[in-house]
Image (cartoon, rainbow, N blue to C red):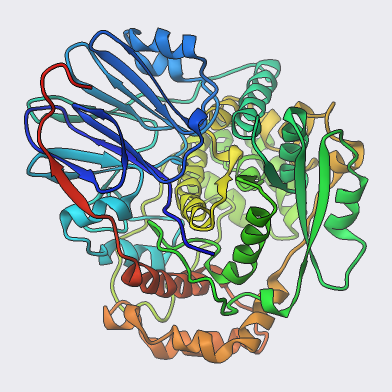
Length: 567
């Protein structure tokens, strides 16, 4: 199958200077430039103009034309756009000619900027922007990723000279070359009933604007993907895809998928064989992405699944990714309870969570007493023995506020998941993760502690909000398939290939020492207990460097300023 271009968008600062624009992109506005690249659904690229003012929403968004027209002249763009469902970026040109770019709350639609001689250029792909500033990988960012991918280097992207726009911030550009960033979002507080109503609207509308009127598929496995599948089936025929080992015809996800009888929902099963094992070579080259993709190790499986769906006519695939991060987060509220002196409640909750995890409550209590919410329930990963460079201390939030730690963690996962979207784009399928939508995060983080955290119930907020849509068995399900054994087997079967990744570009950059990395690969292949995240990060980073090295990259050209009055 021919590889397609990833979907992305961007724009330039206003002014009378030549503007850099990507070759082959579709120009929506010319002064200042605004473009989209790749194959977008028409409903996901919309704009409204009134006089010299213009507004565009890029990405799936629940806003109506009336909503866009209202936002066009609203004094505060963020206030009116806060509850728009979906994952999108909003761009507004004011009557004074200033550009406002509203970055989404959750970083699922990430934004980046570069400084050029013609002014600031912004876009949703750091890889696409990188040729404007040399096209070099930022080895400092990469070292931090290898140290612990959960804690990215602050203020940096994977590409030197390409800066991330913080999620939930407004990027403002003026004709004089001025650039500013200001936060526009902060958590609100809602009653339990208000939270459920907000979550139901945000997730339901986020699904609708993606699947309505198109041929679509969804994952169909645990509670998260099942909820999305049921919501999607309300807007037309939808196909739920359940993965299972070849030869296994009952039990686990398959039983729950077969038991789900919802009008409009069709089911299909994707058998996994030896050729789908992690680390297996495939004839579909790994596409270049902004960052190493979390699914790099299972690309053989994912690429075949995507090709199967594309061949069946699906143009949109929904996942349940992000559900665990939202509804099964660590008990960071213990730090807040300790800070407020609610000792009995803190001790009781810590004991409950410890019993659930079959571990001692001491680490939870100690972290709560230290007042560091971000480290509660979070395993401290030692420095990987193959890391060959010093890395600054991890960029993690401090303090007792559980929401700060929760939001920071979710944003990091959502931003990394954008690489998965780019992988799917290359095979002609628009992949969507509705649980990473900004309005969904806004709803969840507004919930009272007792509605969000429970050691006695599995994902209570999700189960209660959609209780009328999910069968009882699905609401009470508290486990799903695990595939750790597949990773051990995949290493054994593909050992020679994986060992080849240990002494490549990362080693040439001086970032890793190949010998301890090879030792870790051998041990994992033999079935030894393995701390998988740092090992998978190293292998994904090596494969990513190979992919971006062979990719042609984005070509840019300079456009002269548009004539007065041009759009």
